[in-house]
Image (cartoon, rainbow, N blue to C red):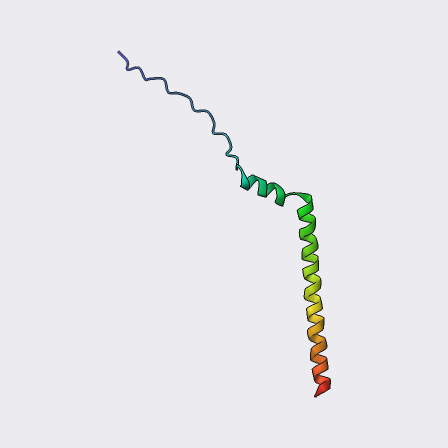
Length: 68
């Protein structure tokens, strides 16, 4: 007589875990078009500031040479 195996319960595929609460809220805010627009604006302003600092440094260097 063959040994009968007990029927194994079939597992349901695991549902994707959703980030709850604050994490999903923060992600939705960061992905919003308004935030992206502000981020690009800030990056462009930082680039302009960097360039202005370089120009100022060059002007100071020239002015110091003239003072000598």
